Length: 200
Image 1 (tube, rainbow, N blue to C red):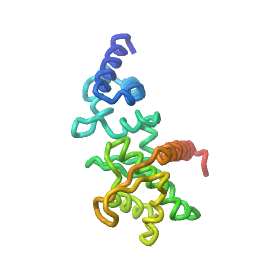
Image 2: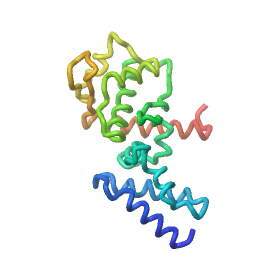
Image 3: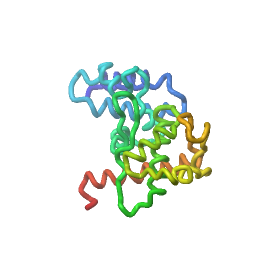
């Protein structure tokens, strides 16, 4: 790669993060610069279209997975092992392994942590009870009789809004966010080992 191309990549990465919160700028800059440089398969690699694909969604805002990557320090391609971002901008958990020996309460709590982290730090939204219930149903981890009990972990989640309504939502506590990050890193590591054939 020639020096002018490197300078152009630095310029594009700098432009992409200039309007971000200061907390995200350094990590986001590294994620975006790495994407631009590793996508350099042709002289056109540094065009704005490449940058847009790497960093923005269809509305032109900073892409949720790139934002989540900036917050967690995990590359966006690794986050894609755990999360799926649909065309309508919804984030779902796809890399959570279904294990028959895992208690429903554990699965519900861990899925809530993963989804809550992605919603808050990727989309800047709150995780609603409706969204969480759908996620749990998709993973066959929804237990209607004990859902409220599973989510009554005040050290991990802060429930807000009227109970049993569509307006009910949950926010992660500091401890909840810490546990979500630890879980996310462990799952990424596990998924990478599976891809490499290191896990039977």
